[in-house]
Image (tube, rainbow, N blue to C red; front, side, top):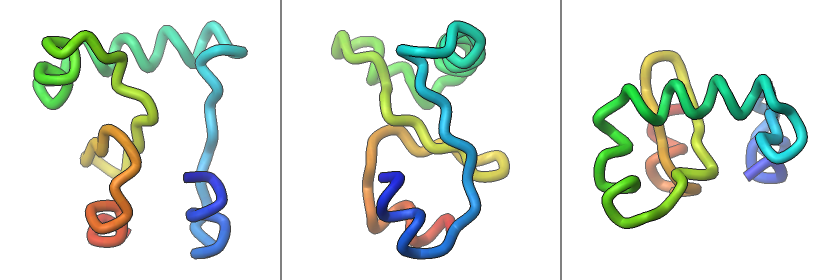
Length: 70
């Protein structure tokens, strides 16, 4: 995902939730309060990677959906 966004020359902020406790807390707050993640949680998945673009949330790397949001 990072490589894809870099190739497209998209400015982005990358947060590694395994290394940054604050980033993990922010992610969990988003995940636990947003209905987009219901099916993810029901399947026992975590919901990573998650891409936030404005008010849109994309769970997982889906090049076609990402392209539409850019």
